[in-house]
Length: 136
Image (cartoon, rainbow, N blue to C red):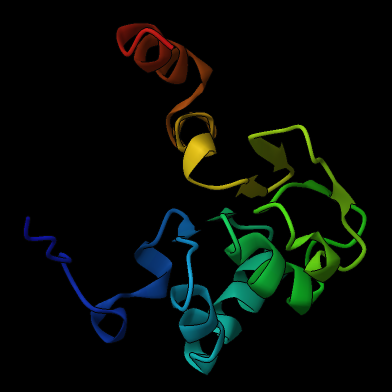
């Protein structure tokens, strides 16, 4: 299977992005965290309350360690919660939206995570239609 991006990070225009979606996994999450341009973009978008989302280890190792989950409900991959600085860790939730930030627990939470993203971008009605169409 070939997976090909429409454009690279350096080709992306930040102002055109409706949302930043960070995948999880290792070592991918660590690699993302080490890209200072991405970290700066996340912090700028957080300051402006623009949509941010992350799943698996990324909510903890990126959002948590950057301090942007402080006082927010959030979830992440089990065993990463110690990195969720100041967050109200929602252990039982597969996906959580708190304000402009959406977090997911991992691969098993991909559908509810995706539905929360869809709702944030296209509205509750669209998300409900998709949910019904996939028999979720």
